[in-house]
Amino acid sequence: MATAGRLLEHIKESSINLASVKYVVIDELDVMLDMGFVKDLEMILPNIGKSRQISMFSATINSTVKKLAKEFLNNPAVIEVTTQRQSVTSINHEAVLVDQDKKLEALSFLIGSKNISQALIFVNKKDEANNIVENLILDGIKASCIHGDIRQSSRALALRKFKEKEIQVLVCTDIAARGIDIENLPCVINFTLPQSINDFTHRVGRTGRAGNIGTAISFLSVKDYKFFTEIEKELILNVKRYELDGFETLEKKPRIKQKTVKSIKDKKALSKTKEQSNSSKKTKKSDKFRKITKRA
Image (tube, rainbow, N blue to C red; front, side):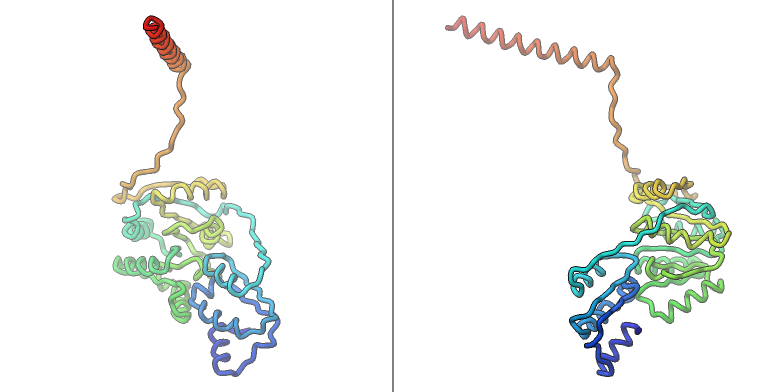
C-alpha cells in the first residue's frame, strides 16, 4: 500500500520492482485525479506487469476517470452501486432566489443577516472557492477553502481551524470534502448546485446529524430552477423559496408554455369560417368552369 507520489519516487530510484505484481487497486480515483495525481498514475501503471488485474474505485465518474480507465483497462466490467435516496427530517431546507452576478454579495449578507455561526459552503469549481473566500474575508468573515490545488497540510490546517471554530466558513468542492465530518454543523450552503441529486444528498447530509437540527440553503439563479424542482420531487421536499432584501431578482424567469384550450363557441365559429371558406373556393371554381365553357 502506498501513495502515488511515494511509489513513483521508489520507481525512479529503482528501489522497487513491480513487474511481478498481479493485482492493482486504486481507491478513491476521482479524489486522486482532483488532487493532481493523474500524471503520477500514468507513469506508475506502465511499470506494472502486463498480466495484472486493475480495479478502480470512484464515487464519481467524470471525463478524466473515463479517459484513464480507457487507457489502462481492457474491456472492464463496470459495477455501479447506488444507495436509496431519502429526505432527512432533521434538515430545514431553504432556497434563496438571486441573480448570478449578485451571488457573492448576497452570500455575505445572508451569513450576517441570519447570524450563521458556521457554514460549510459547496461549489463546483476550484477558482470559485478561491473567489468566495477572498470576498468573505474582505467583508470581515473568517473563511478558508479546501480543494485539489491546495496542499494536504494546508487543507488539514483549514479543517482543524474550522472544527475548532477558529474560522466561520469553510468553502469546498464535493471531492475535497469527501470524508469530512463536522460535529454539530449548523448550516450547509449550496453556492452552486451539484451535478447530481446524489451529490446534493451527500452535501446537505453533513448537517442535521446525531439528533441535531440543521439548515441547508441553496442559492438559485434562473438556470437552476428546473433542476432544483427535480431535486424537490425526487427527495420529496417542499422547500421555502425567498429573496433577500436588496437582492431582488431581475433575471427573466423561464416561460412555461401552456396549451390554449378553445371554448366550444370558438370551435363552432372556427368550423363555420372554414365551411364558408370552402364554399367560396367551390363557387370560384364553378365560375371559372362556366367561363371556359362559354369560350369553347
